[in-house]
Length: 398
Image (cartoon, rainbow, N blue to C red; front, side, top):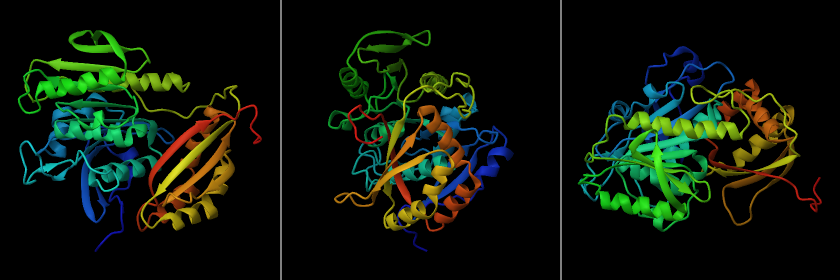
């Protein structure tokens, strides 16, 4: 059976599993993306209804496996309250060690529109976020070797969806040729790495230091081998340069989690939710702020051939549900020169109200029923971008 482009389905009842599974278990989940079955091991913490958890993607090295990455990183053990996904790669050529592509890996280059692993990431993220269990502001990525290189590829192609990354034993030439969001980065490197040589990794680190406009460094985490560099623009760049080889050290997973948790704390402080820091999932915000009215510009890239179905879902269901949950529909557009795209604007009382409205919307039983039914032949959306805006004093729009 051939599936339409980017068809994704899950063979597990995710929502009920969140409440039934042990926090220490890893569940195998299956997706079909572009007629290929993709799998991954997933840690689902036990969550009360209405809570959203951080999400961490962990990409194994070339020739590795999702189970091996779980043993190597142990992110789900170091951060049991996070959702952790250990995806499984497909046979992929590696210029350094596997030119024939006999072993599993990740496509770390190429056009994002055709890169099968970028689309795999999109499918997993869209599905989990769409179910209301992921805090979309707290999505992280880490990986070792080829998985680290793919993490850098995600920075270039999907950096706006990520809160921070932590590549290990990897380098990236793409960073030098493409613009990318300046999100927090924690780079792990072995000083005696003979596969991905330290000089290559240092070139990547040096490029980031220039882009982030960094100066002096200080110890991070109370360790002399971990440094955090001061950025004039306030960006976060840290490194863990150990004395080992290409193999990731035993303590790297715990340090990566510590770095991610520190960034999660900062995000939650900025969003006005300091009560759920570091250790647990995020509750919906109840305290209204006194900020002025804000507008949310949302751009949806539809899955191939799904724009009409996406428009029908908005026209027949979503717009009414938005109003039910306190979001005002302002306008909807279809770009003339950009295919498979829907753009619309919502109005919110303030940012806190927007978070509360979105939370209640994704947990609405009517929406969950409509969302599930609309995806019977695959997801309608491949990518979502959101920008909050404040009207100027000369704008004719109220």
